[in-house]
Amino acid sequence: MNNPMQFMNMLKGFKSPKDAVISMIKSNNNPMIKNLVEMAENGNSKGVEEFARNLYAQQGRNFDKEFGEFMNNFK
Image (tube, rainbow, N blue to C red; front, side):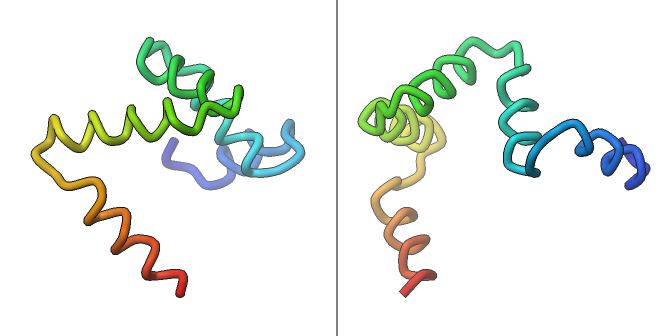
């Protein structure tokens, strides 16, 4: 979607940009993403964290280090 007006028109059907993004994520056909969204909706923060840790491990990244650096931005 290259036209900003198309994007703005798409947002008109939603209460907020957050709702629009959630709708786009939910419409994803990837089973892993659907599972992740379900865990988040059900309040399964441990499952979401485990998902993130596994994803980072597959990429050879350190979740704890990068999450700590991320959180330092809010201090």
